[in-house]
Length: 393
Ligand code: APR
Ligand code: PHB
Picture 1 (cartoon, rainbow, N blue to C red):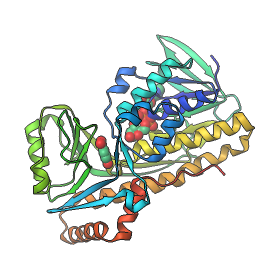
Picture 2: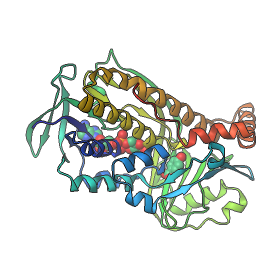
Picture 3: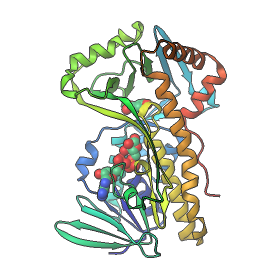
Picture 4: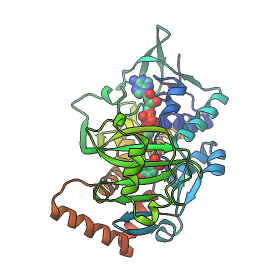
């Protein structure tokens, strides 16, 4: 087999890149370890920056997102009995975010790909990139017990945090930066109307809570729990009671509870691998970086990497600009570190880290300042709607 771009992983990064390249006539093959149903079964975040929305439109897969996505012009930060709104639109001069689940994004991209000629191979094992430092790299993999080889010009490593791509960059070249947080998010999805029209991020003595949504009839809630907690120990009732306790009284009374349709605990981690490329292998999305979900940046950061690699591939195939190859990593990393900083900072602002009385007072002062000073609110807003995408040159 032969193609232009071998894409490893059919998460949002791989599928979106594949769709954009298809539209430009740049051939690509997607190799995915899991089945389509398994990929669609993963519940992830659902707040899209305008850059991601624009990219979905450019890829020609935005019809349902434009119809069903909820445009949010603001969100709330709650602490104690305070509710303070961050008016995204006003503070950024017109920007907003779109609430539309990652599962739906993945479904829309999968459907579009199925309608195209492009090849996607699911349930493949032992995927390995080879000769990435040469001009003719290739990928080997097993499908139905048979070992196959895919020759290509470039390899896009879109295979998430646990994928093979990052591990294919020699150890002495790769630099990894990590912070692991001592808690996770216990999340519940339920077919109940959201508690409010906009998202509410809450800081409480018991820990962080987030009220989010997928639609007007489906809610997504999270609470901070210690890393050692087991999801089996959290009945729906226990979850609702704890969530309710962490919300200001006037919000709490609007909570509609119901049985959970998904419940899981996700650990929180900040992680960056540098450089994001080696030879003809490029790392994209979670393969190169992880953010704690507090700033809703994971998917959006994957989208900006995709935008950069897409730009690079188009410049190479349409203009012969292979001199731009070495710009990929630095271009992505500038924005990656901006989002890492914001996600880490939002996590610090909103979670309970320790019982140190001084730290708690400083956190309260931060909450007070960032929710009342206009310039501080502006800082939150411009990061939340997403920093600008950088071009390769
Ligand atoms: N071979 C083939 N496919 C693999 C391999 C492998 N060795 N390892 C992992 N994969 C697949 C996974 O099964 C998964 O479907 O790669 C895909 C990676 O998808 P994601 O983990 O979703 O990563 P990405 O596409 O970069 O998505 C960005 O943003 O909101 C965040 O973490 C969230 O998934 C989200 C991410
Ligand atoms: C979600 O809806 O899953 C969600 C929203 C905002 C976040 C994180 C997760 O910051």
